[in-house]
Structures are given as C-alpha cells and as structure tokens.
Amino acid sequence: MIGKKDLEHIGWLARLELSEEDKEKYTPKLNSILDYFGEIDKADTEGVEPLYHVLPMNNVFREDVPTRSLSQEEALSNAPKNQDGFIKAPRMM
Amino acid sequence: MASINELTERIHADSSEEIVAEYLERITNSRLNAFITVSKESALLQAQEIDAKGHDGPLAGIPIAIKDNISTKGIMTTCASKILTGYIPPYDAHVIEKLKNAGAIIIGKTNMDEFAMGSSTETSFYGPTLNAWDMTRVPGGSSGGSAAAVAGGEAPLSLGSDTGGSVRCPASFCGVVGLKPTYGVISRYGLISYANSLEQIGPFASSVRDVATLFDVIAGHDPRDSTSVKREGNYSPALENDVNGLKIGIPEEYFGEGIDRNVEKSVRDAINTLEELGATSMEVKMPHTKYALSAYYIIAMSEASSNLARFDGMRYGLRTEDHDWHTTFSHVRADGFGDEVKRRILLGTYALSAGYLDKYYLKALKIRTLIKQDFERAFKDADVLIAPTMPYPAFKIGEKIDDPISLYLADVETVPINLAGVPSISLPCGFSGSLPIGMQVIGKHFDEAAILRTAYTFEENTDFHKEGS
Image (cartoon, rainbow over all chains, first blue to last red; front, top):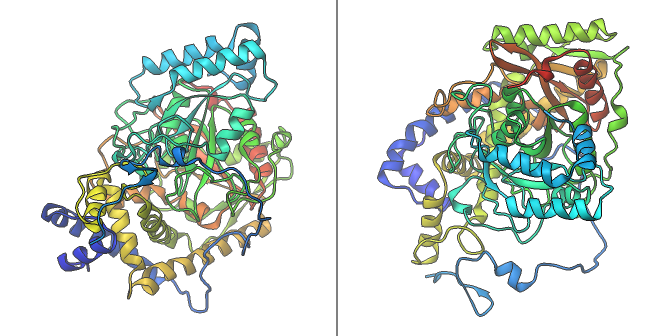
C-alpha cells in the first residue's frame, strides 16, 4: 500500500511536484493498480532468469568514425532559455 | 480508399500536387481530430517538386501521416503532450529519412495518447480522436490518429508505434491493417522513447499489400539504434495467395473470459476460412498469458519513469518560472505532464525504488522469460498463431478513461507479443453491428513473411477490408 508519505517520497524521486489535491486523487488509483499487479506473485519463477532484452544482443560496437552532428545553433534551437551559446539552467542550490 | 498502385497511376496521369491537395482538404473538413499538425505548405511544395523533377521511389508523390512521437525535421513533434508543445525537431527519425528517399510526402502529424500511454487516444493534450465508424467511440490507441486518418480517407498510409498494442489496437478498432514488426527490424532512432525494450514503429494502410510496401521502405539496419538488426526490408515478394500446408496455432488462452462473443466468432470463422484454403489448425497452450498484462505494465512503467526523466525544461519543451534546480524541474513536469503519464512515472519510479525492485521489476522480467518460452513452444508446432487483436470492438469515448485498470485490461491480447518481441499483424475479419473487428496473425521472430502471406491470403479471399467507414 502506498500512503501519502510514500507518494511524497516517490514524487520527489521522480521530480514531480504533487499538490494536496493530486495526492488525494492519485493514492487510491495507484493502490488499486498495485493491487492488480499483485497477481504476479502467483507465478512460479523459481530458477527463471530475468529477460531484459528479447534479442540475443550484447555490446554493439562500431568503428569510431566522426560524422556530422547537430550544429550548436540547431542543438540550442529548442532550449527555452539560452545565453551566449549555452543552455541556461536554474541555480543548483 | 485508394491503394498505392491506384494513387501512383493517378500521380502519373494528373499530379502529386492534386492528390496531396485532395487529402489536405479532407483533413480540413474532418471532425475526427486525427491530426495535431498539418504540414500543408511543405507537403504541397514537396509534391510540386516531385511533379516537376520526377522521382522513381516506391512511394513517389504519395502522402503519408506520421504519429506525433516520431521526429520530423522542421515539423512540430509533441507526443500529444503539453510538455513538448512547440518542440521542432532539428533532425529526422531514420524512418522519415527512408520515407523521404522513397518519395513519400509527409502531410501531417497524428494525434495519440500522451507519450503513447493509453489505448483510446483520449489522454492527448489536444483532445480525443474520434472513430470514423461511429464518432461517439474511440479509435483505439495509442496510435489512434494514424489509424483514424487511414480509416477516414485522410491519408492512404500512416506510421504508428506499438509498445503494447498501440498499432494493432487502433487498426482493429478502425477497420484497417496495422503491423507490429519483430523487435529490432525498424530503427527507433528519432522515435521518442516510452518503453524502449518493447516498442517498434509500425505501418498502417487499408490493405496488406500497402502495409508490406510501406514496411519494405522503412525496415532496415541503422547504426544509430544499437538494437537495430542487420536486415533489409524485402517482404512484398512474400505476398502470395496461398496458405496450403500452413499450420495455424490457436492459443485458447486468447479466447477466454472477457472476449466479446461476436469477436470470438469472427476470428474462429476466419480460421475456418483459412482452413478451407488449405491451412490446418491446432490448439496451442500459452499458460503464462494470464501474467502478461501485469508484467507488461510494470516493465513499461519502469522504463517510462527512466525515459521521461529527460523532460526537464532545459534543452527543449515547457519551462516554468525559475527557482532552484529541483523545484524548477518538479514544476515543469507537474505542469507539463497529464494524469496518466504522471501515474505511470510514479508507479515506475516506485517499482524501481529500493526495497521494491525484486518484488515488481525483476519478477516481471522473469515472467517475461516465461512468456517468451510460451511462444517458442507454440512455434515448435505452428507456423503462425491467430487470435483476436482486441477483446471487443471500439468502446464509447469516456467509458473507461476514469478507471485505469479497465483500460489496461483492453490490452490483454496485445501485450504478450511485445514482451516476446515477435511480429504481429492486425487485419479486419468481421463486424459487430457496424463496428469492425480485427484479428492478429502472430509470427516467429523475423518471420514477417509468414504473417504477411497469411494476412494477404485471407484478404484476397474475403471482403471485410473493402467495407468503408
């Protein structure tokens, strides 16, 4: 069960601000979904390996050949705030 | 609905510009809300260029609609989210480069569930898309706009993406053909990620032949997607009107509780039709199907929580008033994402967090192994599997949107295919009243040829795909 405190913690981990109204609204729905997910506890997975990827691929290497990448102008073209060719971020602290 | 061949003839006789203008007019006059952005000027310009210079590509002068989570250079790409409204990609997705090389003309970007999270196209920031067969009903999702555009005659071809059924579901609800290829066959470069271990771009059209032609154009290796396999698209030769000796597996678990009786009857009748044409059928057991839905949603939400961390308001998208870093980041996301996206990010974050990783995420990945093994066993005996695409025909707008679980349950027949990474094509196989029913033909890894041939043979010998909405 996710309580209000848990939801605040998850919201922090996900960098998603939740209003009091959000918390009221989401808690029962999230819990009913988790309740449904409880179904998987019934599956016998003793000795079964997890499958991260459906194709038998490991590291994929390529030749280290430089190719054209986006220009600085293109890369910045969607940044809501930029200055002197840099993306402008809010202060860290 | 006009085929690629018919349109090509008309382009030679008249012009691409005329055809593009016709489709643009239909989009303008439509109430379906299938498009978020219509690229009228650039489409007409491209058409004029092809008319003037000629083009020998397989899709020369043919209009196509693109799901709004596939990056198109210079054309706004939003994922139907407020957070990306105004975002104009500085580059094309691999599939878009391939389409342009083939001479196709992008006429617009289609509506979808926000970040492809949904099965009804109701979670779009731009409002729901309507079903062309009954405007009180959903077109399915998440690629609802792409399917509705083809069904409504607003585009002869379109692209969607399928993470847990998002091409096949709307194909089924809209009475068109949609293909989810084997994982890795189409490059995901430029597809804005939701759950990258599950999703593939897939083609829509009004016939199996056109889907195969489009698939041939967009398939192929791309070093910019490390999961892309080294195969080129050459599937059209597989389209033979012949299922003699084909072994069809019928997974009984896909015909169980909750399946509409008309849907079940139509799909079983379709299997009978294929048997009359020379195929044989057998029952196959897929005992872990009942765990697929939960496992799918846990994996998809976990991957989503990580993939969507990139939306921070710095490099692109919405930016709110600046405070300190974490507060700004949290405000941008609170303001920019809709409810379903937030729910999935929160649950995915929870499933990956300390203390819950084993219980949810790892357990789901182990079930994924079992599901894949179910398919491997079934394909020892069967060449293809046939099942309903969706448990029921298109439901009413608003019917399920407030109850996430009932909406998730709609995906029960489609998600196992993505967990296993196998290909599946949905095509019309009947009607429930005035609403189309779709069946899916599922194949082995990289055996798109078998499912295309099966679907093509069914289509050649029936008339369901010819009925118009």
